[in-house]
Length: 238
Image (cartoon, rainbow, N blue to C red; front, side):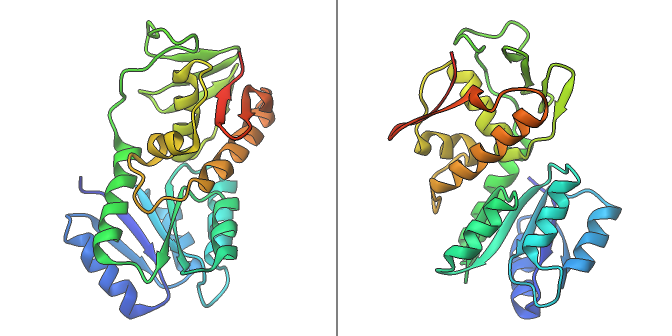
């Protein structure tokens, strides 16, 4: 499960403690004290997960770093560190394209658990999948109209136009296409995205769906492929 993680936190003591906990699980952890250092490191090498504090002391802050990464179409898994009870921080993080968030102060056990869950998502072997009609996809590829998703390659496209999806957006799309038009509740999608529902806020699903719809439309598809079912969840249109 070893991975390369970038930890971006301006509190040196907290950063050192978190880095040591992640390193204890065998991960290679690079530390950055600010957004500028983080962007420089991200330009030089690839990471499996970025742990990014929202409230960095000097600009660019964590939200801006996240926006720049998503603007560059990177699919790195971004987990934001937000202040406890700071609702605005959570909203900003998810709107910027973060895959997940964790509130500070965070317990070491929770931090390690959340990192492992993130790595299961970005490194998981493809499960058995179903086609858009609900039956087994012969070649393992999911199709719906001009929308094509290859779970093994972790790629998606609309026609010939590639979709640059975050790990969480890709997980939502795969779950909906596999369901073949059946309604999936927010708790079900939480499990599809993160693999567990510990410490998870189902509201995060709505942000991932919103970004997914925007990207579908921008690639020449239809945002309406993803249908909201009031008081129930989401489904793929039939």
